[in-house]
Amino acid sequence: MAERKDIVEPCAPQFYPQITLKQVASQVVEHTLYFASGVYLYALNAGTGALKWGLSIKKAPFKSTTLPDGMIFTGPPPLDSLVGLAAQQDRVFVSSLNSFVYALVAVDGTIIWQHEIDLASGMPTIAGETIYVPSSTIYALNTKDGVERWNLSTKGVVTSVPVIVDNTLYIGSYDNNIYALDIENGQARWTYQTDGRVYIDPIVDQGTVYAGAGNDGPCLLALDAQSGELKWQNSVFVDSMSQLLVHEGLLYVCQRDHLVGLDPKNGRPVWKYPGINNASLLASRHTLYVAASSGDVYAFDCTRHRLLWRQKLRTLTIGQPSHMKLIADELYVGFNEHGRGQHGTVHAINVLTGSEDWSASAEWVNALDVNEHVPSM
Image 1 (tube, rainbow, N blue to C red):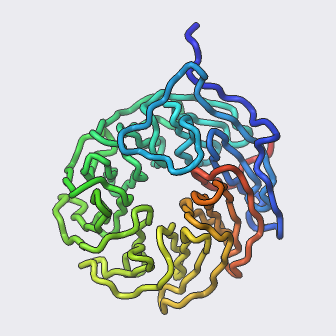
Image 2: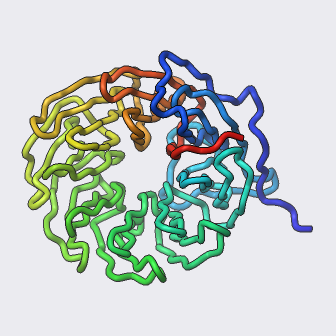
């Protein structure tokens, strides 16, 4: 029997996250929040933060790991860290630097299948019965059994979240290219060579791909989603860990310590708000939610561009927010501290009031996702 390259086992109690409950979010108690912290995967009650189960997923001691070229950790996650997470119905999918993708039973974390890949490098995307996993190679795997449908290798690591629109998958790579791929077979519809690494995840809105690329500091660019032709390019550097978002007629991004709303047709600034950088962005209806690297979360009225509320969750010297998730009236975001003493925390916030309902502290927050109602064990 071949030696296992990985070790999957229940999380020891001393590594459980520390939960602080202020108020039960009753509207989401039937949902489950999953988050990855280093080699640990946790499932929490989305309404209370109570731990449902935890796993340790790491490489076996004999297996060495080398990070892909250009991929740098600025904090404590080990070299077999979980880096990608996606929840769908009765399953949870995680990808790891131990070179595996796992499908787990959502209710208890039992492994359904695992598939060996190159070192995972970012968040996966699920569309139908296929999960698309980024590394230096993009993998398309069947969600039911992990069978590989296709893969496409790039010459650099892919840290962007794959975006799928009209049967086309868009990714950006550290090989200085943006790719548009046929989701059925992985064949390139077009590629666009940028002036440097693609740091800012591509997004697609109304026939246009927006991304940020450049070795000395990413600049924004807009491409035609069908042809890959350049529409415009903004020479102002954007924050390298900022997200892009188009909502109600504006393209939002962080530039030079400001949250900026740009005209998506030409990249010209229309609105800005000071004191926000390297932010995670999410919009729902007429509200824009912003998680800044300072540890603050903001809610803006998009129609009038006025601040609705601001919640200082943490005071961070050098912070990094995770992608946010919104279920009903509950907003979930994770923060990592890179400065004095590394530490990660997941927060549950009532978006109607801006108040924090609960938090979960761990060594790190690599990724998080929220699942709809998951039956009890």
